[in-house]
Length: 150
Picture 1 (cartoon, rainbow, N blue to C red):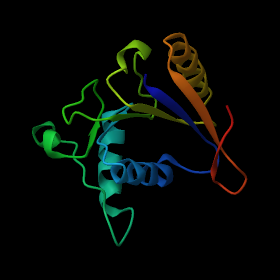
Picture 2: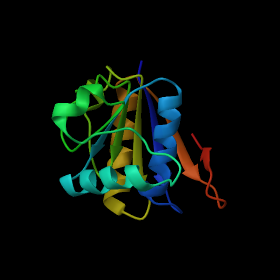
Picture 3: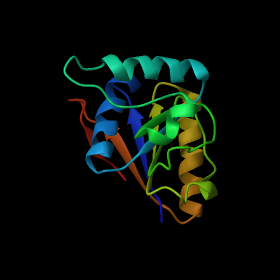
């Protein structure tokens, strides 16, 4: 059964959190697809993943023609051309709770300051629980670290 993790951003941005989560994904030998809410977010994350750290980069692509060979694929569509193990949902991207069973894990990262994002996360939580998935909720501590809440 797919494990679903909800990351509630309060003190950090998507751009500061996503690279670390992707690095952990690759360390486990998994591939990831990052589904974004817009093409603009795909472009922004594509650029950021090349430059977020002066000493390293995350191998990735936002080009469908190169997706199969990449451990991280960025998209604004419902597609998984790199046979990803992990699905990230960011910037309002959605997934059908019944359609995530092909993934080992699904991670929804949402902005706690955006009422619609919070409402969408709550609705997805209910849907994945109803689908029988294990769901955990992670919230940032005052020091910025994520702590499991539920």
